[in-house]
Length: 330
Image 1: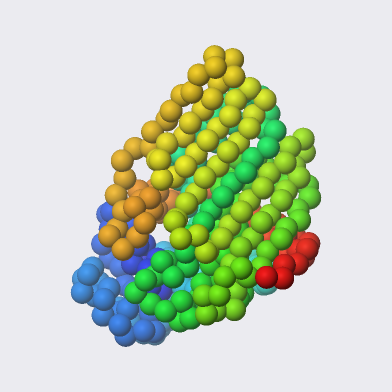
Image 2 (image 1 turned 135 degrees about the horizontal axis):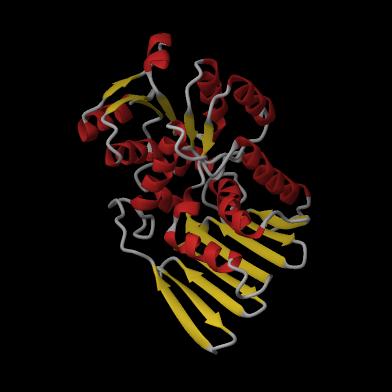
């Protein structure tokens, strides 16, 4: 199988590692930046290019799209035009998505949007516990995700990459990123309102904190996303009728309090490996499993667990949250 890796930034290099881990050796990388092409050639011994020819697009079996989010649609359109299955990183821009999804369906082309955290062992355990029905229905949950934006890519200025731009800002992007796995467990909310805005001057014009409140059928949920937290964290408290679930990614464990026994049960995550420049909790294994799911879908062995239609529903929740913003003046 021949893979075309579109974009050789941080995520592009990770996807090359994922493909290699799954036995895909025939990879060509595309990026317009010479430094990124050179780095990928030196690290992974792949051939790179700064232009995409029709022959290259036709000869590749799969596309992996790891560009800034505001470029995703351009390359997904190429995948549809050349009838090639494509994996694409997390989305944050809905404009044009419906037309693209319709074109992909008509051309019978698989477009697989990223849903990385559905492959995290802790998230999988939470889903199993909630959907088992053993502990009753959800009553409420609070989820907090916090990271410090300058720590995302310490090797480059935040003004120089997409996460520091308003439409594709890190905080705005992470709302649908987190909702993609949360709503897979809870279902979709009936009502949404939020507060969001800029709370810290990092030298870029972005909203750095989102507080999204959701009303579901019979329960409530809150999502807090920020990129000002000086300590990187993800934590969940989820209350069920007969139990409480707690998850903290730095503890690498899901904790279940069973009200009937009055005891806690701890489910430890398996050991994982993280690249040196990333947070120790960002393990490579979930990305590899995500890529495996894409390759299985390409081969017809399974259905990829996310779709453009579901991506649009998630982005619709983000847009409703932004439309309902009560305003923040700090």
